[in-house]
Length: 486
Ligand code: NAP
Image 1 (cartoon, rainbow, N blue to C red):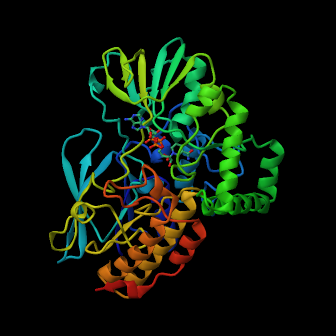
Image 2 (spheres, rainbow, N blue to C red):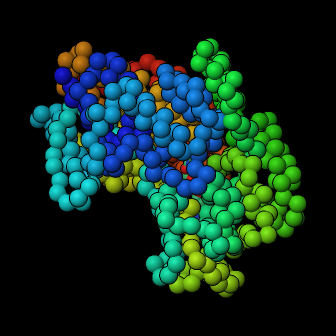
Image 3 (cartoon, protein in one colour):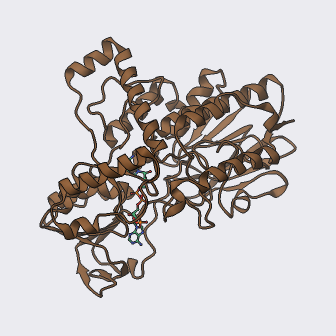
């Protein structure tokens, strides 16, 4: 029986594990560095954390949930969903908790991966395990980064990253600074604005913000979803169709892009009366270049009297607060860094060695790239879920993950059926794929401003160009000629 080791236990790991298990590949183990499963939906517990993709689509196609409390579920509910899916499909018992994969080495003789695993509960000691197939499902947003600002450690108040929320912190009556105005900040700021005495938001770039058509599901909807599951499938299909259009129109030039921009500007005008604040919140780059955000309560929060939006850059953090380029020191009791994640260096926290001592970190020094985002030359029997160029500017990552899982299953099926020991994508196939992709990415909206989708080399490493249907088509049938089977 071919043994498979999966790194992670979030949506990506579950998508692959369930697909493989259902196909009869049952020698599976998942290594999870934490004590619980769920990936980003376990870690991001800041107030207001939730998903800006509607839940009927932001869920597995094979496991619709008629019990969603609202159209855009919040973190706790999504995390509970992940746990329940893992239980339903018998994945939970396969997870080895508190096991952090720190290295993996391909052994040509045995055609296996030797995986080095640290005990994350004690922080000491490593063990080794051997598997035939290594699958990374560590995600793209699992390593929070505080900003590089002088004096960060000198601050004497409370400070933490949005993805490492300190639940002992109570903002009531306090003065609080938030650094960042991205997807996480937009969700947490309305909560802080309500509780804090004073809130200072340091916004480096404004975002295009659209209204969020959120609403609680009534008892009637839930009953309908249960007795006529087709109704929820129809809603899923409708949401998918809308997000496909949205993803196609992520630029100023397209008709959908122009409509999106008009809606975002209308939303700003409607919610922010003060022209000075409105000017601060008006993006000066083409729509779609950064993630378009959705919120009904972010702008009203910023318009509150106790909230200041500072658009000057930060020069340093002092023991008392934050200093901006105007020389103003904003004294605060707490600083919250909603500054995002280390997204550029894919898989670099794991020392991965492929054929003839090839290091993945070296191969990807100028930015990660992989055939269909999943397969890397010189790294046989290694598959990557939510790998390079599989993130979306709009739409559901879960849809993408299911497509990847199906492709990986086909590859594994052929390996087993053909009695092969290893499968490795050819350099030619990967190069040809990457050339075509790079051409599309050059003309994508993400090429026109700074964003987390781009590697410092300039290469766009995170995003898939376009909507999800072409990706599903490209991955529907595994092409055996793209691989070397041995
Ligand atoms: P992010 O989108 O990377 O935003 C980071 C924010 O911090 C940006 O506003 C950035 O400004 C700012 N920043 C970074 N360094 C700074 C500095 N030195 N000084 C001032 N500002 C600084 O991170 P995020 O909000 O955590 O979201 C990351 C991703 O997670 C999202 O794009 C999305 O894919 C995912 N997410 C999804 C949801 C959802 O609803 N589905 C919710 C939260 C997060 P610049 O824009 O100028 O760089």
